[in-house]
Image (cartoon, rainbow, N blue to C red; front, side):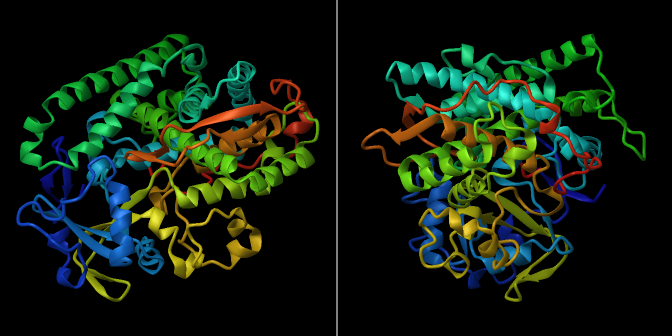
Length: 516
């Protein structure tokens, strides 16, 4: 383990030299900051504590590709430009930094894949043990379960449409993605679509994410006083998450973990590292289950919700995407695994939605050694910066003067080949990028295809996009009107052998390492 210095709010050690961003930027004065800075308070005037990410986006528009903000004595450096972000992607000089809201999640997620510090050994152990669960062969095995959960969504939406009611898009996408990861990863059914409200697990999860963000908006010494009630609620939320996961693991142990890699939980409980023979500890299993249940559904539900918002606002895009679904899938009741990847334009819709509103909207990078960022900004070892993905994805030098406009053709093959690497990063970067990227993209593309084939979508009159922040992003209050199209048969028809024939690829991790 590396030498350690200061500690996080939960007492975990941080790499030596971590003392805040300003300590590691020798020429900090060269980096612009907002005007009207106040002693002690810093740049907090006019800042909305509910939308710190969108506030930072506004500052980036005014201050440029790199800027700094100060709050309660702590100064933070933000990167919004593609050239700087590309340099930060250099794994030889930079690594993932666990800070700000992510570190605040360690009381609930510990050294799980997303919240582990780089020096903690359980990250590599868990990654190596779980990576085969995202191979092509494993993904094809999840596909029928994804179809089954999608059928529960469309059944619910059919009833709402028949009654003339608009549907709650963020709420229903959250139910869908929670059930999908719970079924495929852990063999568990939360019964989300049989409930009038979100499952208590989701309510507790939203509470912990919101609390983690609020901790960043108050001075640390005053947090126990200013957030006393919120701290009590957060402790109750964490206890509920832990109880839910402990019950799930206990039930699997009673049933007997398969040991043959049937799903994520079997791998966590019964699979040893292929080289060292190590296994995940019971405590780390809990952390990993919580990590996958939260990260495995929260960001995907946001991505689907934003995509459905843009489809409802751009009928010409929806018509083109629907025509592709009808052409590629035809009257096939249940599309096979390989048919999903053929929806290239639908995937572009999803990518363009993630460009404008990446639901995991930032990641932090720290210097492995003394270095100079992009040849201009000296950084000492341990200094870190936060990459603002919505601004990286709007950099006009990359995306053009119309970067704010929704246009899925930005992701056609020719356009994508013409762009530099590291300009589109909705799943993070480097060794700690999202281990479940392909899972999320397959699920989201499948669901969009099914919904486009089944419904005409229209937003309620007068709706204006509002983005809520709870570390992740979600379109707030989005409701859609549905009109059934006279096409598809039920989506639960059994798959035939031809749906998944062809040699399965050898187990591998589709990417090296959401933002784990």
